[in-house]
Image (cartoon, rainbow over all chains, first blue to last red; front, side, top):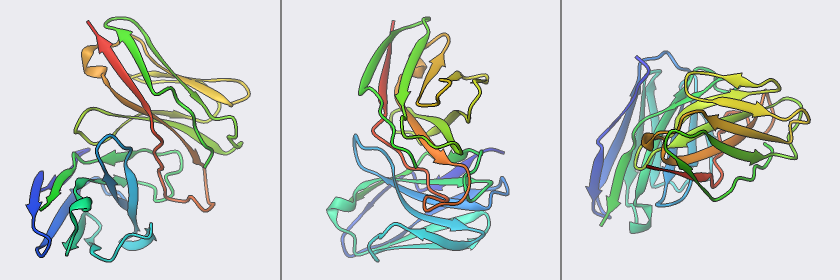
Length: 115
Length: 114
């Protein structure tokens, strides 16, 4: 199994809603990542979890709250988002948290629309 | 990580080889060259990576110049399904402030036409 599974595939939420994005991998990878991608732009790193601990936060606003319940799961909790937060949210995982001589596997993403 | 420069877009005829260049003139000795691609509305997909030597796998070949300041990704027989954005990324091998980060540049939009 070399898949990173993200749910839901599409999400529409209001600015006062609370929702969560989920990501799952069963490759035994030790690092998991959240990326945000706006239309026609490259993916931008948001968070990195290494051995289930948050190791990198790229100055992401607190309305985005990551959580890693176990080594296979990664969540992104959303609260009080703005319309400009609408984007494709990508999850990835890798065997080596340092990404040294190893590849990252990406999920297909959650297309989020904030109304 | 070293900065990379790629052409904004390229075209290729189906069945021909697609040669995608990447300039990384500030690359350091322990930095790897990675290539990913992203087909429209999908997650990025790893293609290949290398340090010094040329590399080949079932998807592509990676040619790195002797001075390591540039590289070329070769798709030997491009198909319509290879139409995507191709990202060249340079990553440090170990340690450093970019530990654990995979930073995407603007990439090259490759269009394969019939």
